[in-house]
Image 1 (cartoon, rainbow, N blue to C red):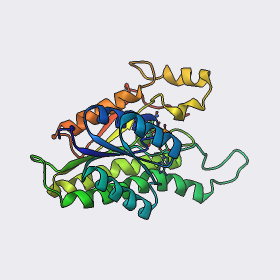
Image 2 (cartoon, helix red, strand yellow):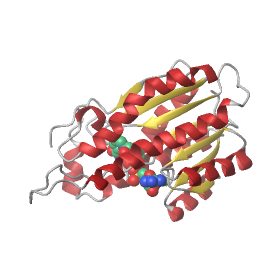
Image 3 (tube, protein in one colour):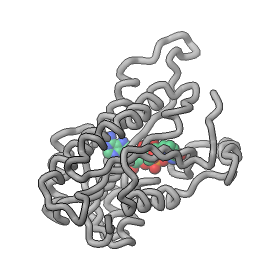
Image 4 (cartoon, rainbow, N blue to C red):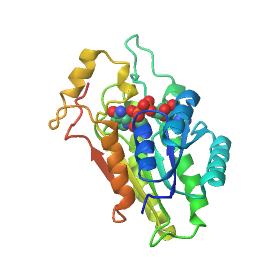
Length: 253
Ligand SMILES: NC(=O)c1ccc[n+]([C@@H]2O[C@H](COP(=O)([O-])OP(=O)(O)OC[C@H]3O[C@@H](n4cnc5c(N)ncnc54)[C@H](O)[C@@H]3O)[C@@H](O)[C@H]2O)c1
């Protein structure tokens, strides 16, 4: 799909991988709407790239439906959806004091990462299915999984499960939406330098950065955005999960 003049939605677009993706798509001529919980960062970034900011929680059905309607009114029907909104503070199944992880903590991470991604996917695809195709396709969805879907570390039970769910639903949704000419892909990033890592000490960041075999550094958010661009513009990419991880396989802890 040609990116120029096409409407795009980027969730989590206020920060990190989503912000870089929104900026790259805007640079390529897309009409970009950022959907994010963070009003201050989201509005400022939308302004800086000439995009539209939509304040919504990805887990809120009504807020997401209203945000997508606003985006359609401003930019026309969206052809590109990139789901980057996500979080996952670590927590052990059994804490060091012997208490089990509260179920609502596990459920919250599943809700934001997996249900939120599905919420956007379903509502975006339903709006797009009735639109005219552009050439041979109608649009494309790129979801963000994680290397943790395959090699989750201690403390990542909920996060890895949420990202594993994104991996597992890629093919069935791609198969289902094929009749509408909508592709579905997922990217499983390794370690990228985003605000998620800013809470770590310099030493912890340096240790993480040395782990990928090559290149032995943290990924740059624009390198993620570059893969999103490749996926959007290459119609043969469909129903697949691509690890973007400099060959890292995460250690148990
Ligand atoms: N940075 C990495 O190394 C890395 C590695 C693997 C996967 N990922 C995944 O990439 C995605 C982006 O991560 P990032 O590193 O850019 O993090 P980030 O914290 O910089 O950005 C995440 C964005 O999502 C938004 N968000 C969180 N919950 C939301 C909700 N309920 N509704 C709407 N918006 C919400 C936040 O406000 C934030 O702007 C996440 O899904 C993360 O799990 C990141």
